[in-house]
Length: 146
Figure 1 (tube, one colour):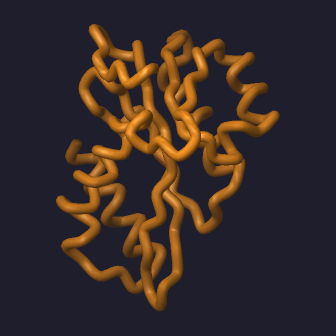
Figure 2: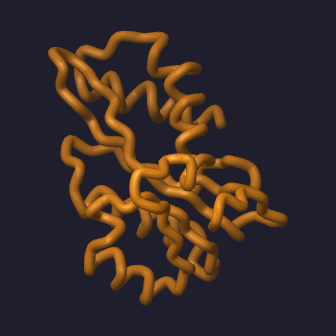
């Protein structure tokens, strides 16, 4: 994407990443999301107890279930899920254009990083979460309002 964060239409450019909302006694949930760069709308999201390939692949499959014919440029960081054989198989299956950040360059994935910052300041940091279900409830509510 070369830090070109402008899109002239929906489904032209997507960004994806995983963040780690905490709950209870320093436990972590893992929230994977894909946003559309055009309007910063959430294309798909999955919350999980585990940060693994399944989390990221389920997020991608969910995006394509809703948008079966699109071929966006899909920007990610270089996390192990995005460099996996499974991710590459889905890249071939769905035909999206793969774009990855340079090593240690979080600004290369700035739209989703900004989205995480907004989500955390508008929702996550405003509450305390005792359980995974609390995190899921608040994430779902926040995303439905977007």
